[in-house]
Image (cartoon, rainbow over all chains, first blue to last red; front, side, top):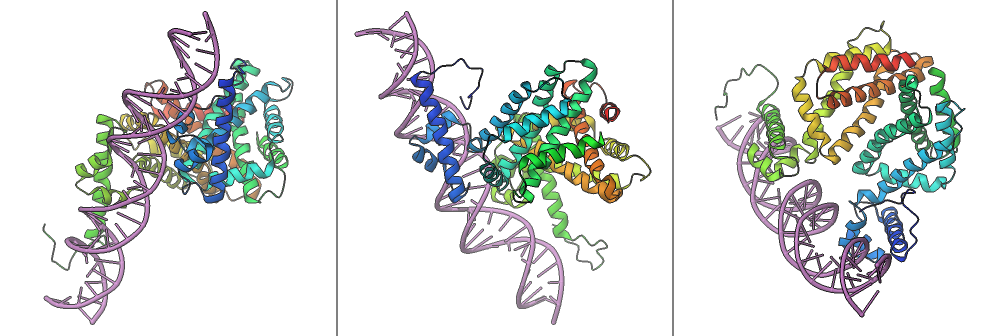
Length: 201
Length: 201
DNA sequence: GTGTAAAATTGCACTTAGTGTAATTCTATT
DNA sequence: AATAGAATTACACTAAGTGCAATTTTACAC
């Protein structure tokens, strides 16, 4: 089965689990390297498998598809943000809590690397589509997380709105980051986007 | 094949254009039929081409991919909604104008057919992903259309918000339609979703 | 009508993603 | 040491999608 890396899996540090994580990491590293070097379409699974020291068939034991090499990065991010949200104070306004969680998570990754991945994803229609689709999924995940943190039925619709605005602000920020070629740090763009939308609500 | 030899062919659309439209329509009809009958994956392009009376290679002259048979329906809808928006009064509040445009457009299509297509798309991950991705695209298209209709720079961010809320409400409505198996008409669900979100803004 | 340019259609060969299956090799556990 | 189950692999296969080049069909000019 493909990517788990879940924090809710009991800490197994046997040889099997360690090898598994190593192989998973090796595939993504090698894959990303080849994608950036010679392009996504031009890189075949045979090459990736060979470079990762596994058989082509084994690749499909770790990933459901070629796309998933790229998407796994994106999906991991979503889970991390939701985890970070749980660490935020319940006294904050929900929208602020989300914003701060996102900023905190983004700070943990090298900005130029994030931009390189983003640029790569933009260049592959099928991947870009799945990435944007994951925004829609993340919005619902975020909504569920918000509901748990502020479990007042009265606020439910409001939290739905917060989830929409948050994902929208994130989207706008990354779009701006791409548009202005990383001129300003992502944290600034996030602050700006959240503030602008909040002013309207 | 009776070609009209007369010089008095009144309309501008010639034989070529007519045939083209017919073939396009035949492919989607035949494709949808087969998808609904025997499933998406189980239907091959060879079958579709044969049933549509064309070669497999010609299929790719009309569609970029198998997915596009389904997506073409979805994408058409977006353009129609934006066209309908331009017919709405500029006196209305933007959010109401969008809502009414969407309702007007939906009313033009048979509800059960729309649900059948929606159900089919949900069952195919790759298609579902592209559909959700198109929501993101439509949000921007909608924003641009709104900006043209209410071209006040002061309101720009507000209209961005309207676009987000609108697409969100549409998504929620179609989700509800699917969840409750078409119990209530789509217009009701749209009214409800828009009202609920508007109450929070 | 005739000729001609462009569009539409097709066949063929080819690459590559992805799957089913069954055999084999490892790792964990008793 | 033995056994169960996970991981790895080879092999064969299907089907989507592309490139190319030839052929037919439509449009339009003369």
